[in-house]
Image: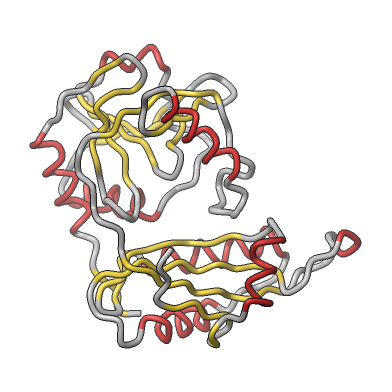
Length: 267
């Protein structure tokens, strides 16, 4: 992993400080692409961090300070980079789990990954992330399911909830096109920032949509499937299990236009 910058509370991270993030599996984060000190959906990223800190740590996160820390870490780095903000415990003990937890902020800057546009092959598996509404560091299960999917000849995985309904992908939100409207699975999922921005943009374009439960039996009735996250915006799925989907260039162009309506916010 090539790291451009790693700062904790505004200072270069030390090995000792980073040990906490690797040995204590409790915390949350957000990730984004930044270009010349600007990001899309900055308000949503900061809200995500603030809400998760209240729920998981029982404390209030100064999101203005987080913005300042991100701005500092991005300073002087032109072009696209990948920024990740982790909120992790200052100290966590078994006996103190019932108390408010003080936190620290790690800002990690890496080169932005190459954007891949080829359709993705996926399979379904019944799996629900712990506390799916939060972008937390408990990622073992989802990465294991992603690995098992690849060993089975697929590239990624689509999760089914306790009722067997489609919910979300490993690290992305799932969407379908039925020929008339965009269909989003209604389930307990992480509402991704890219997902929220795309829905805002499609609403501005007047694109019909529906948020409803989606059963696996409905997969053959959709004309196209896609996913959305902060790295790719929107990318097509070529299959979900044995159901194949042809690439729909017009749909992908519509999704791209909807996503790109989101402004770049100056950090």
